[in-house]
Amino acid sequence: MKLENQMAMLLTDRAEDGNFEISRNVFTDPSIFALEQKYIFEALWTFVGLDTQIPKANDFLTTHIGSQPILLTRKSDGSIGCFLNTCRHRGTVVCPFKRGRQKFHVCRYHGWAYDSDGRNTAVTDRDDGQYPADFDGMDRNLIPVAKLASYRGLIFASLSPDVPPLEEYLGDAATFIDLIVDQSPVGQVEFVPGDVTYTFDANWKLQFENGLDYYHFNSTHSSYVDILKKRAEKSSGDLPQEAASEQEGQGSFSFKHGHAVNWSIKRVSRYARPLSSDPDNFRAVTEKVGAERVKWMMRQRNLTIFPNLQLIDISSSQLRTWRPLSADKTEMTSHCIAPVGESSESRRLRIRNYEDFFNPSGLATSDDNVMYEFCQSGYAAAGGSTLGYLRGLGSARIAQGPHAAELGIEPDEYAFGAPGFGGETNFHAGYREWYRILSEAASK
Amino acid sequence: MIDSSASAAADLLLKEAWLLDRKNWPDWLGLYAVDARYWAPAWLNEYDYVSDPETQVSLIYHTDRDQLQERISRIQSRKSITALPLPRTVHIVSNVLIVGSDAEGIDVTASFVVHVFDPRTAREHCHFGHYEYRLKRAAGELSIAAKKIILANDRVPTIIDFYTL
Image (cartoon, rainbow over all chains, first blue to last red; front, side, top):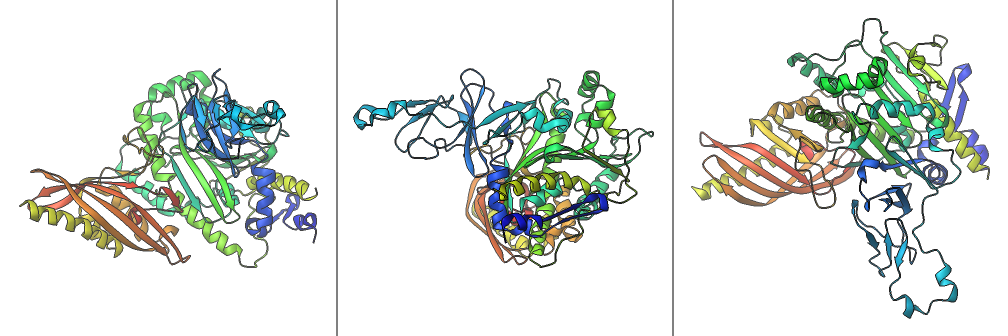
């Protein structure tokens, strides 16, 4: 069967009739994985690092976009460079290190050298090389990525030139980046040192879904909830509270290009938050952005920027990205993202809470990882489409609320429900975008 | 006295491994002092790992035994999918060296390999690295005042926890 026709069987989008179905194949089929690599992971805006990771000239870090090795540098003029980490001579990875500061990157194979601007500064024994006459006219510089831009210190790169400008791509989802960055008295974010990388033997879309899934929290993380309850009994501190006039519940916004964000309004929080643990900074931030914004900063928010970035702000704050290695294996890179200039007390709380919740060695994320693997195993059963994308499609859906207006945004979709809502319509934007991109690709 | 201390110290390390492999959590926890520090730092780069847990992220950082009890309770509750089922583990502790000894306690280093077999998926992993212990003396007994676990292969396959380190 032609791939185009196969594509049509993968997604059933009749949300207006209360139906949305995804075929199990999308999680298991290697040909879909190959299309995703080419048309999604190596063709859209991808987060590659923070400004604050490469503050000084000649600072660098290495990463990947899809399976392509990438070198990110601070150039001599203070701007950012982003290149394919492959020597122009015979393709060797030029920079083998994770991060550092180097004026030149010398390929150890034959000694070709490049500077932080990506310029080829030396060809070993050039004059003895009997090169053809047009050699000097050949471009021997490191190949730059097609597009490079940053938003509030988050650097994004695209290997394809066919992407809208970054701010247009992010759209109103950028507000949820602002809600993290503006917790800093100087409007900057940094990664707390200490890298955590992990893998799980399952498809990347399980992580994509899980980051927008409030429905699983009380079951999957029931052991963590028990721990929080016990700690709250023992502690004397006040936990953050919402004003009595605020309606409790869970909600989401979906945006163009596949982004979505979940948020939660709870009368009493389960845990202390770093922002409110520093009264001076809390006051300063409130003066800077206003009480309405601070109210939103104090709310649980889980943001997904399609295709592979999640920013979570709950008991602590995390930036995580994923790199699919195969249809059934995914590599995650996780950092504690923190406001520059917060107090050492806030920072300590942020770190401890991050270790508890977000580490694969902690008390919660490991439950998600194991669960993804059980899903992947379950998908091997010829069980047809699941019933997993329906919560929020009923006639009781809440069409209006104050939330978007409070933030000054115009999302494509809005959902809000009771604290037990566990909405699933917030997955739809990402899957629709996924489907649109792959259908176009399949028809080529 | 040095010899018997050294052998008691080495035995404690091996006993800890034995108890973990047999999933005898209460007796395992009993090896630790009440205010024991249990620390698995994260790596900063290829060569350096985290040195200050107050300003840098660790894989695990606990400053009293109650936090280890939280982990045990989480498993015993049978609410965490990570422990349904628990994997089989074989801790190999080797290269045990006494590197310091005084009236209060003994400093010990060792190498470890934890072989993990996950019967759920028939998948095997090794987690390996180094231990640094501070053992403290009290009433003729040794207990673990501090344990640092430096995990060499830190690209974590799905999950690690106190019983796989």
